[in-house]
Length: 617
Image 1: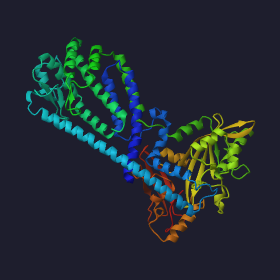
Image 2: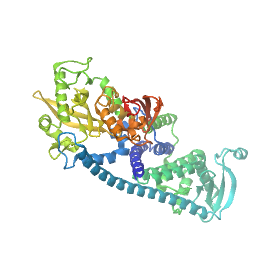
Image 3: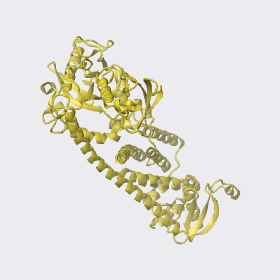
Image 4: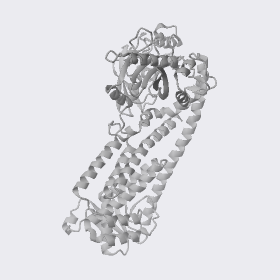
């Protein structure tokens, strides 16, 4: 069931990406409606490539840079279930304690969360079955259409055994016979219109009794299809339609792809024989369009598509000038780059913004009061800036301590509504029991009395601040959260005006998420299990249990667990690239994120001996 959920969630995420590409292509196609349809036909190749391949190239020109929600899509494979889990926990009436939950409370919450997750998995599994069943039915229908069409022409007789598919009126008989690719032509009295049948060894079927001139035009049209391998492309497009049948935009794309394919072949015939055949050719289109085809998706039929649109396109067709071809070709290249590349990682954009003037902060330095991060040495130290840092630090401390009176005092009414929308405040209470960023002096261990947050950036122009929090549960286990707030000063009083974002890096599935969660690595931060007091507790639990199968006794599994990486080996792969876990107490683990094709390396060590656990540093 879990595997079915993963497959279906990945399918939904891919549908969102494909939808954006289809809408982009439709918009560009609209701009190109006055130009030859071969350019519009080429555009659909971009959609097909995006549907088939999980592309990892990042570009500042990607259309997905306009859709920042896709930056959160990296954790969508496990994100929907995790969101259900977290929303259930946040809204549980049992919540309200102001300290970290005890183990018994955690077990109760975990049980309820597991039950909710199981229900969600069942729903997703049912949807997955419906989707797969629809795909199978579509493929069965396509196969049935092909077989029916084959039976329809079983009585056909051969007209031409070998006809070159690259035919021009100026070619001599000898030149035609030397053509590299050929197709056979068959006549049949049981078909309503000409068509091409066969993916690789294509045959052209035409009705009996066609006029020689009309036959010449239609054969040229069908030869154009074969020359461009259109039977194969149409079959591939139908298979993709069968897989993506859930997405209505894919049906629209298929319809317009077929129309553009036919119109571009019409134009090729006009280019070959000249504008003088437009009237006769249009009459042929009208004649065969009146017949209904019993074989639907299987062949490429001459009368396929909207006859009225095709006739209008034939009558209006003019060969474009060279400069038009150049401009349109450049546009197609631009669309390909925009649609076949991914958005720039959010953390890269943030770092570029920071280089342009955002002030960054170092939480490891102190300003005389414990827990107040100060401005970096290279930043300005004006009184107003120091006051902002101090006020944001006060906000972060209140957030960690779930200090409701201070939260209400420092937050505007709009910000409070944002907290409710993000699920942070429920029923008059701020926050939930666990996991939650630990507050200062929450633990007896001296290492855990350090600030539970780090101010990453303050943009005084936009009046926003980015804060990293370190959340913990009683396992114990540590996560990183990121909060982006808007703030303002009214009568020199600091107030949080909005909660722009709260990201919980619990299922890290991409390089940019990894960098956002661990911008300064692990060593020396509160994610360092050697110094945050959590490692000793985990190691003691494992040693006292006497088991040698605990995942964190293996450096790869420990890295996946303690670094909060997505537990999906297809999406996030880990392997030891340096050191021997059997002999050494220090190894290098390489992390490969399939979604954006990035790699990260982390050092895993065994601080508590050969029988102890592995932790990142």
